Length: 414
Image 1 (cartoon, rainbow, N blue to C red):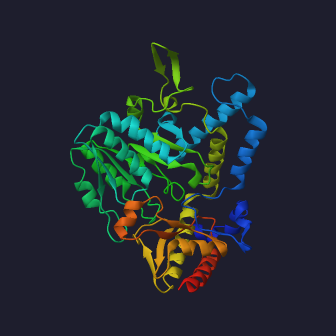
Image 2 (tube, helix red, strand yellow; image 1 turned 45 degrees about the vertical axis):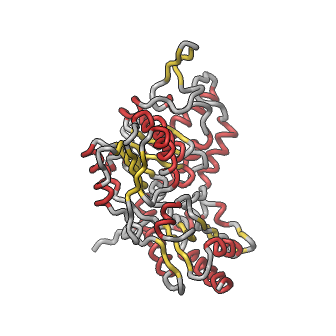
Image 3 (spheres, rainbow, N blue to C red; image 1 turned 90 degrees about the horizontal axis):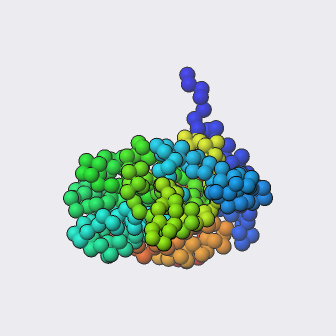
């Protein structure tokens, strides 16, 4: 008989919650229920303390300083690159460009990789379910180059129609893009299969990993993509942090996107020579303390373990979905077979913004609106949804409190 406890049964949720000071506060006199994690996660004490210690003990600028503080700051900043590279199993630390988040990472690919290669008649392929950050940059470079942007369809369950995505990988497509996990639907996309089909056709693939990294281990080598973008503030880290992983051959061929200090070898008025990747893409003073915090966030994830995190979050997702289905007139938008803990929904006779406003008065923080996904809203024929997004520090009791509050505000609005 196997007596080993499953990750879910040994998951000490109260100990974990004690590490997140904001979770203990009240809002409008009610205990906070924070279900807006897809927008930004809360930060554990080790992240807060790491940033505090940096500013108290090690604050200096990075690179080229020979004094002690400068060496300490540089070691911490570059140490974060090392840790993040291992976290996503990048083949080399020099393939990881530190950015302010996924938006900057995607724009870097758009202007430094895609734009120089695009010609009239070329195309970029994305999907209907993408965040605007994985649509708008491609539209901007397409307008400048004469290329077009194509969007692969999804079905009513919120799942990508893989066969049609693959069929749209036609010769004019020079770059393909896909989110690993939808920020609105929670849908998990078949990235490995997409990457395999792209490789067969010699098409580079960019993956938006913003909503995946907080919930599951990521191995960019196993995924087989060419570019992978992530955001730190959704994965327990500070705002203004993120990264772009790219294959070395792409980074070497890409020209700098930003110009300034720290990304050069030598500047002369008759010409400038640039540093090797990744530093040629990291002009200016970076968010040093932010990456110190992100390094601590990675440590925290590894101390909890993604097996335990996934098991707990899937329990919460199933329980929250079951409870929401009990509410009359409630329609869940997106019910893919494989999801992360994100639930978008509407209630007949109510507006999403009204619900979110009244829920806030009950201490429940959820997101309402289009979630930076206008094309997805248009596909489902709705102007907006209410989105409850959970994290591993949430509880079944919070789900119950959310349902009680939702029933109360629904009654007020009906």
